[in-house]
Length: 122
Image (cartoon, rainbow, N blue to C red; front, side, top):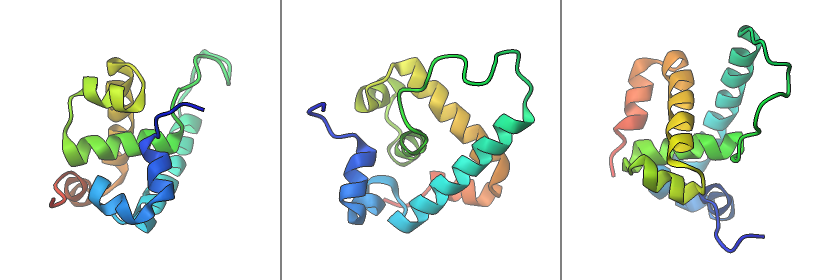
């Protein structure tokens, strides 16, 4: 087991800190994660691919961690280099994961709600 603690693991151990870290309460985070998984499933089912199901590289982060990564960026606006260091992935992976989830949520959440997520008060 690595010595570091992922932000998602920390949040699960300390749910009361979720609002301070991400700007939303823990129950809302769980709802957002469930909704994000549903959006991803619908998106994956709707697209046609040439690669056989299960092909390609497996992501280093779980879906929960990827959504948390997006929320960390929206809350704190670190560089993608720093975000990559925080989640122990490459800068480009952090950028790609952020853009993937932002596009999923951005297309399926009301604009006002997505903007509210981006502009939550400190």
